[in-house]
Image 1 (cartoon, rainbow, N blue to C red):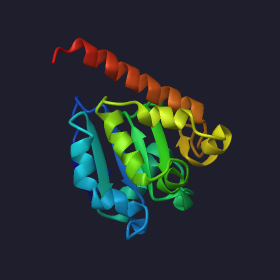
Image 2 (image 1 turned 90 degrees about the vertical axis):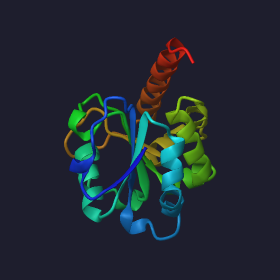
Image 3 (image 1 turned 60 degrees about the vertical axis):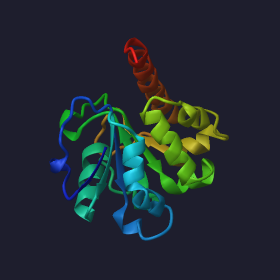
Image 4 (image 1 turned 180 degrees about the vertical axis):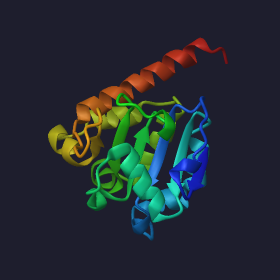
Length: 188
């Protein structure tokens, strides 16, 4: 599923959605790395399946709302364009909610290509493959990756963004394992 919105308040709540992927950085979308997300938005929405949602803003206000609600960090302009991966609808957000901020610039440098990352993200969201986690877990120079590739904000401490790749990967791994357990209980 995918939504393009002018306000975060317009994002409908669906209890079957397990993952929200927010596309951030509208001022950076003309060409470059953000183009991969923008040009393939419909394909990404289709590829991530029915239990995940990709959400893009139609204006800068939307991006500001997402950053304020989920990250509480204003100084991330140099990291845009980016994706914010979470397991919580804005109305259901708690201190324990997963919030992983992924800079597409860093993905491009460290992951290979944004297209490969988006393919792995879609397969991960559908529960088909944990290649995304395996690539992030085996990334070289894990401390430098923690500083730039994945930024996580758990728990919420106003004004502070904690950089902890291990916590982010652990939460993503837990999400993956829960999804796999649920999928194995449902007959095809």
